[in-house]
Image (cartoon, rainbow, N blue to C red; front, side, top):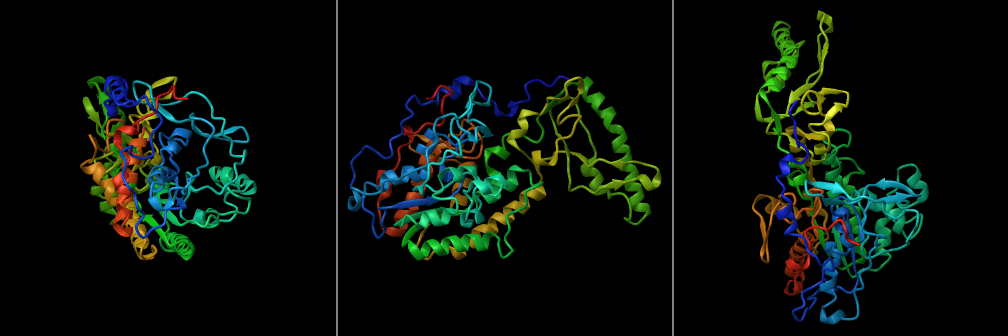
Length: 503
């Protein structure tokens, strides 16, 4: 089979264009060097505390590492807030910095997450080396930035979410273990204990992302109905903060299915020559014939057996010579076709992808490679189906978008009255659908070239975080009469990527 360079085929990257974006200076100033007088309006920025998950923590390029944390949007905002003339001596924003710029995490010396991504000339690649940051080397907080990768809404409430005992049974977060104030602490409790004067709350992002990055297979949709679901978790967190904190900003949940992680690999990226296409079509013929038989059974038994013609049309497998063939997948949503009562087989739930499907960026690591190194005819996505975790189907996308809409309605209803609101859902959509101007740059949703999303296709670059911080500060100014936006972050002061050689 002539399947060459399928990994990152869809990225259309060139080293020249990419490296033109690299910034030599990794030290990003926290605010503009043009003098302006900043006032806080009716807010008090003396002690800001941020709660959230990956984006809030500064996670970027698939990892949490020192420079990424420095360029987290709360840290950028805090630099501007510190200029308010009322708190010249206040607002020291603390973060649980990692020990290096390799990325990843150890648990008792054993790797937990891999290193950060860098551009190797062909596409994103994992940085060689192993981090020295160990979750069991506790740097006890609390910290101003109380965000940790993987934190769902309900996790913010859980006592012991940062405990060694919880970690051993999968009920604690190693990033929070490293920074919890005690073994019994909760994220919410650690935040309130600091007596914050201002809070940034971004809840629900990880809830939605977990379902999406799993391909909607093993991780359930965010829970909107049970007594312990998102409404309870967000409402409890927001209500508890409101009881102790006068001012804050609440951020809603973006449509994560719109980011590059789900929109970089097309649904039909498989190139085939005539000979290969003919061989594959011959191999698919028995399956297509069994589908025809199933349609006949369906008609003969009044729908008791087999499948309808409409479902058969979805499942027929067909390829042709050319550059744009679909991907072979298993789809758990298809009807199980059991022909054993009629002397036939149980058919696999195979179909080809279509324009309603979104292929996860992580699939590029195996797409077009041999499933069996000793058998060149067995190729992932061509003659061997990808499993459900590699694809978001149209129905899964619709279900998740409906769930996100429900979370955002809950946020609208339960966010503290008088607090600023930032519509991340609309902002991220604007970046993806039309681009957002940021000084001399147009930030778009394209992987690598767009400038907003990092190499993992999900989390912002440093420049993306700077733009995000500016937009959130605009929302704060509109609510409290402050003028943080007059000292907005400058695009050119923040890189769009980090080189492999960064210390």
